[in-house]
Length: 152
Image (cartoon, rainbow, N blue to C red):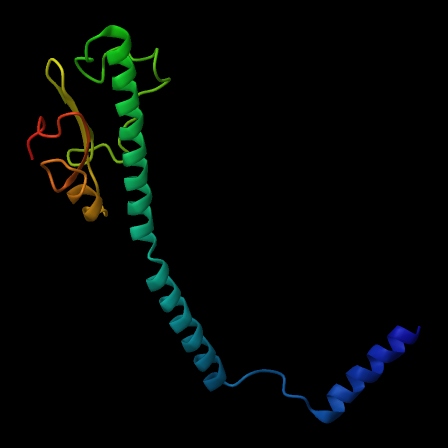
């Protein structure tokens, strides 16, 4: 009962004092402009495309490290290198990783001769890592014991 009386009094005061019921067009435009500017600043600083590229590059480097471990374990057990990544390596890993994009540009390469091998993958957004990995291809991340087997 007290609550209903209180609501009635507040409503009556609002009607009598003529509280404005909305905002002007200028106020709405200003708020929309400020929100748009804040949104643009956040999107430019976060840069979702670059974040996705970096995440895919991290996956590529992790996958190549896994493949490097698999090749080395195969070499220790069999006393020879696998001829390709399609060789049965199920004893060493559940699944052979595939590049996150896996197209004509982004894929994993493996080359070997009798005693040396190289694993390679082109990175999207990490040129410093590719250039400083010790290999002969500045555009690809390379692992192995002979980083000159795959030509750039």
